[in-house]
Amino acid sequence: MTQTNAQRPVPSPTPADVQGWVVRGYNLGHVRQVICTIHNPEPLRTFLGRATNGDPSTQQIQSGEHWGDVKPPSALNVAFTYTGLAALGVPARTLAGFPTDFSHGAPARAIKIGDVGDSAPDRWDAGTDDIDKVHVVWTIHGQQSDDIDAAWNKLAAATGSSMSVVASYDGSALADNKVHFGYVDSISQPHIESFERDNPAPDKQPVAPLGSFFLGHDSQFEDVKFDLPTPTEFVGNGTYNAFRVLEQDVFGFEAFLRRAAEETGRDPEWIAAKICGRWRNGNSLEQYPDHQGEPADPATRNDYGYPDADGSICPIGSHMRRANPRDAAIVQRAANHTRRITRRGMPYGPLIAPDQEPDDTPRGLLGNFLCGSLTAQFEGVQYDWINLGLQHPSITGTNDVLLGANEELTSRFTIPMPDGPDLVLSGFPRFVRTRASTYTFLPSIPGLRWLANAAM
Image (cartoon, rainbow, N blue to C red):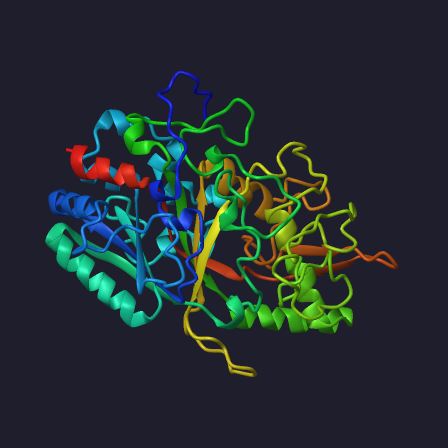
């Protein structure tokens, strides 16, 4: 990232200017994310023009405008890799202005974020580690799976032979907005300047500047704007996304909870809450330190901080506290709120029934991590905080239990106990394996029009 004071100003975005799922969740119960290779850019550019000009015969790229009380059957969004922009005909002078995290691509950054061992690129789904093939990621949310099929078929027909599919992933929401590990998800999201109404629940965290998520504006770092290639008509108000297919070892995690409960004499749900920082029903430990209680009002369950400096209520190494330290004291004194990212995710694979015998059916999360800088935000959280624990001396050298690159010989998680010795859990493996990862750029709606008309 650089200080950029002489660049052409980028107008503040309106909801109509940005791709919608950057600023709001659609609450549509199904999703398909399709990775494609671009072979012929012309039909694709023609489609992008029609998909952003109100053409009633073409499904439009979903903007941030609210659709009111009646939801559409589906919502379409699109993102491009660095090599995908090149395949579309974006000029070399524009490509040269993108930061190296994006231009290098996810496979080259794998070690930095803990994609090693079984999560290394050579273990990813076929073709997804090849930056010469991974060009575009289409995201279709739908009310029903049939709605997604219909939207994809229309998209494929409209773009013809311009692209081929590398990999396709379908996800569906589980009951009560839970993930396969049993936790309620998507509770805490940043409030973005000018878009606060899209996430109105109160909390104790500051509003994120526009530049935290949209290129061309002041970022969360004083006097710094993130790198902005030219022309600003294309790149301005765009957003980066780390799209990741994260396979979850649900049976292994539940077995670990049972073993830890036997070793410590504690309830497995209590241990699960300490590991995450929330009970599995979504209530935070800070608000419900002793028992999970009934699910709290969504309007208040995110309104908390971390007054327990020793982690006696919510362990410093818990997933929630690592990923978002809120007001807690950390080593990087001014970094508490600088690495906020917007998370959009959907589980994939069938729900496990109670007492079900282990099987080999893939289950996990289609994760999307939206931000203004992959290095400063996504990679900063993933590397410094989720892995290594660099924000606090008491957890430095340890990895997050849920998402961390753990190995049985070295894994460790400490639960501070105010009335006795700390409980230390160890010997647990990695519970989440990366199956695919791409770094993409979501142009604004005007940026997509620029791609349709000028990238040639």
